[in-house]
Length: 552
Image (tube, rainbow, N blue to C red; front, side):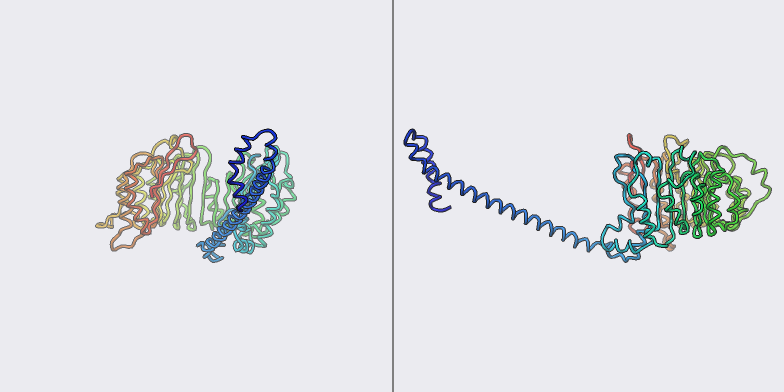
């Protein structure tokens, strides 16, 4: 501020006072001095406004510069991320385990965004990942396609759906394809139309059928009767077929569609098929290694496929009869079967007893039994192990049968399989504790029997157990006995540790702080190398999923 400006500024009170005291003609004489003072004030205000604008611009510039440095710092920090140390081969192996979900439709009009396939997402992470993904056809060769004609008719189609499929097919080059296809058609379309040309993306996939290595199909079968589509069905590389038809279609239609695939798949060795009570004879010529079926004639299956190593039988329907017991005259041995899985849904009767009584599997290593309503035939199982001479290494017992299995019967069963290395006792994933006929608590008696005796090793059962998974449903549970059992199998002075993992699930049990503190002993073993998982699922009112409490 200049001297004159200060003078005018300091005289401002006097000027105002004179204005107030002056009136009439004398006021005109003072007008010139006033105008000069106002001009000086306007000039100074404008000057200050300019300085403020410059300071704001400078502040904004500094903030922008700071943000750039912050972003640059974050990028430099990202360069130090541990994942950047992974070689391309290992990173590619990890990305291969991601599912590429390609949807043809939105769930609703409010669902404006569907997640992009994981391979596409990975290609957008950084330059290195994009170069790796675009140069790896194997990452584009695994597709899970979901097509819903009903959603398309309701205006919920996803734009560029077919372009996405083309992109994957082009990027995958000539690499064999692993394809999972779900097709949802309206009932009117299924009953009146066999033209597959109107189904988006279907012909694009069929044109690459010569590259299919594995194929899983869920949906209607009538579309495969389309002649134009049938001409493209040639599968020289197809090895695994998972066929799940709609339950409400005639079986003859499904068998014919299924046959179309089998006839053109010379290398097929693994089949999973549901809702066909009798497998087509055309597949008996195949050299199958693995089969999942609902066919109840076990002997017929084994006769048709003598090379089978893995058999999964899933029974559906009403009660069994005792007829197989009367028809079977002698025990039949099948030396190639190494894995046998038996699932019974909505049935009860003598099926397990029939299998254990009249069939022998000398090379059986894995047995999985999941029954809805059936008593475990302990004596028949004991005779089965004795007559087969098999050495079962993995045993899984589940379903309501497991819930009703007594500890005494379970103990006698485990005595029959001394070389067992993996034991899993569980309930179905979708179980409802309020509808279960009974609870399945593990008693202290059973836990004591599973505890290794260092002084008398001959009395131990399944001493070489490596993996143990237990589900305890309701009732009381001896936590101390369970901890002692695990410790006895981990801390074996002078002997090799065999146990590698222990999983304990409490179904609908509230965990108090005292119990959580008890399991700190297993937390220590987890730090020493034993994989321990202990958790509880507790129902919550108003929530669909149970609340999960993790102890270890």
